[in-house]
Length: 123
Image (cartoon, rainbow, N blue to C red; front, side, top):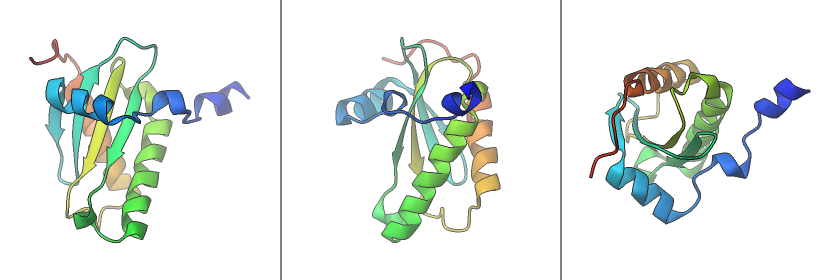
């Protein structure tokens, strides 16, 4: 049962306010992948948090929601791979369409690997 609880995605692990997103954009580190852009800023919480943005350029509401579901699932299943405690914002790139779950997961994990050794936030 403890394993199921650790696989949850509670509100405490989500970025929800515009100000939280803006702080990550302004002071965080940016990592670019073919289908997504990851912004990361260390936080002082006991866990990492995730925010996702998908513009209309990506496609219909169905496609945008599919991307968000996939990214939430990837985050939820790979919490242990995050090197520290970060506020993460993932932006979908406009040509996300053909990306399947495995490709998105590989890109997300690659971005996380690049975060290792992240220095202090930028001014």
